[in-house]
Length: 610
Image (cartoon, rainbow, N blue to C red; front, side):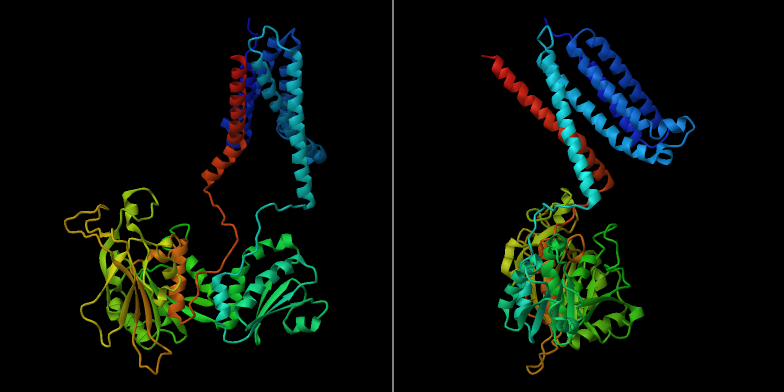
């Protein structure tokens, strides 16, 4: 004879609470939310009635009605705060009795939780006695008390967290490591042509000062021109005043009268975010004091890529991350168009001119101004797309280059971004020459491929200008790449060829042997997307930019970008946030409970078989 017990009341109780939750928290205020709330209350009341009827006359049958009653009491506390007073024409408790409202706001979720969890454990206990003619009241009572214990422990944890938050107590248990001195920063220090001193203003025995001392010790070993001093502002106020420091917790990097400051808090907990990005900040300060501020111009007015485009709308049109890399090199980025004098001459303070992704041809006067700037010792970085090849043709011709209007594709080495055939135009190029324009990438080779989206092949023009520039092709694609002439993203042997195509070139204009100070240089890439926010997040593309910048500006060869231990934020859409919220609140605990139930059931079946 089996136990006369059905799970219908508990299922109804859970469904009723879910309906109340939908009406109060998920659905917009209105008829739907009101209907859901009332329906949930009715279902909970019916479940209570069924449980009383089912458990009448049995000691074990009193547990579930008691727990359902606690749930109704919790809901009564919730609705008595605002809903019931408003229905009765009274003010909400938050306005009339704020202290009571605060007590009920904290108490009703705890009571509801202390009701729901024991219901689940009592049902498990009753399910284990399904074949017994009589329920064991002691086992049911033990299950209910276990549920109360777990619920009270969790409520205590929530209360402790709330109190700690109100008191401002925090404990950071996340992974932490101070950024180490990168090869880029060490080589920058090794190339110093004048003494640079780093002064740490911290009291003795400070934890942050010890982290900083280990970092700067690596830089001090890189060059005799880099020195480090540690000073307590309270002990040596004269030196602090000379460096413009008024308290401890400051790092000053100085070269002569040029100084840069970094604010790093005295407490390790507060200084962690700064220490994670320490190498980047130090790199910026050393560049700022060792090199003067220089200006980089980005040609505008022909629908090129822009620093001001919003990456959220179209990351392929935005160059915001490229601007960040320029700023890191102590370069000031400005726009250059007809309004800034491009129709006449390139500004005299231009250290570098960028032309990235023009879609419309420039005026002849604008092209002539850029050519005069280049031939007089200027530096150009040109990135053109094959679909807009005509827009860049006049300027590229002056550099003895031309770009094919046919995009390249590869079905073996490509970026599977959407898992469609169109992804084959996102080729991965990793065949680098040993040219100085790729000082870092050439060391990695195939281990660090650059991503190009719809790139076009570069080639020398048949008629070179006079005087003729020297062209070195520095990046080639993998041998399975083909020119997708019909745009079907499939290799067609008739008319299309698989081979290694050249996609980047370093151009110089030879100068007399006694005049190498202002050698004209240009770096040309057959793809503008490679510098956009969408692709420059790829480490190889960022290093490509830095390598090209340093070669164009005549700076010492430096291996890659500075190091950083900062966490990359994970960004989700609103729908994704909703999905993760409900998954973590309901799905994850449900899966844990389901796994525990399955393991327990399997174990009991094994015990019964013998």
